[in-house]
Image 1 (cartoon, rainbow, N blue to C red):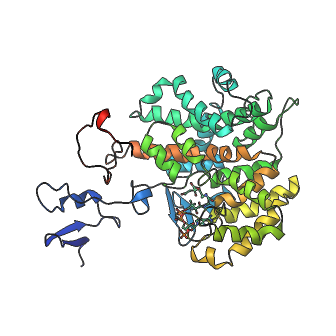
Image 2 (cartoon, rainbow, N blue to C red; image 1 turned 60 degrees about the horizontal axis):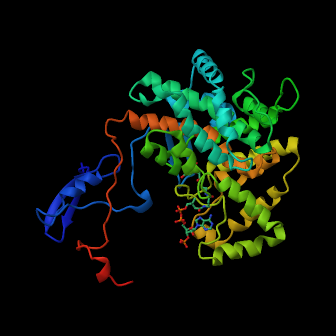
Length: 426
Ligand code: SDX
């Protein structure tokens, strides 16, 4: 039976080492024993952007990037999108199992009855200019929330952790909707506890003079499925930020905001508008291929998926249901043609660039009447359960401690201070 070890010979010294292999990994700390002498610090692994580094052990989400597989706690994303609801999926992600009816009812009651925010949040939010990007309002407001729940710092207390997670899941839609209403100079709409999670969000965003808002069932279901698809995605950039910072969803929101991550859905819409028509697609593709990486086909490519993002397939199917209600977003024709051309072009095929979760989602959000600035906010709302479940897994992992990576120092060697009169301008 072959041993689960790696035999390493350091050719600088001729010394041999046996490194244990566990779960397909070696412990990078085991490299430290490989030294050229007593003074040597020992070997480290060098892996900018963690291209091949496991930062944690996790049981939450499994992705097979080559096969385009995504599973939450073992359940395929396609089945959850078809048969479940966001709140049920949130329970699954948090607890590892689908809830029985009473468990679900209790969880739903908890979330529904924590949707309100302190009235001071409105005063806080009113301090932003009307045209402040809603993602920066969201990040700031989420960070400020911690001041309203000082007990949240007791992270070793499981009951306190769970209470805060429920609060965040419940309040993100309220804060997001308030930021949207603020941008329009419209009054904030309070949560309606009779509505579903997605329906309540639509009510807080859309309600005008009517005493009760009734969301369109197709749009409500489409948004709920989009929330399911965005709930978690293992160790992506914003989840890693949340794990590393270890203390706030604000870290996740700010990491998600960028155009290469959760801001890509906003960037896709701007790209499709810039292309403007199907006839202009070849010129745009040429610009991407010859631009040396300057111009990207936004919504395409992924660090892990080297196949079609399974979420993009589901989102593409939702588009038709939404358009049946809202009317077709003409940008879908440009997106479909862009995908068709790109998937036949050697540049994209060779680099295994396929549509990702952001390629089609923005077209749906726009058809539902959301401005592009709200698109990353619509990503952050459902991702909150993923960030916080991953955070809790980190907090309760006895192997984890405050993150403090090493560096490869290539700077100036030690030297003495030089007085001003002896310096030369460089
Ligand atoms: C999300 O990690 C997650 O799980 C994230 C996420 C989640 O749910 O949390 O799935 C959500 O962030 C999805 C990704 C959204 N971003 C975009 O759509 C922005 C466009 N895509 C890229 O910028 C890019 O594909 C990344 C950032 C997503 C991934 O980049 P990598 O893995 O660092 O790959 P790379 O930049 O090294 O690219 C490899 C090659 C390069 O060309 P060469 O240097 O080999 O010549 O592919 C090229 C890149 O220039 N390339 C693209 C491209 N993406 C990569 N070229 C044109 N258009 C693109 N979109």
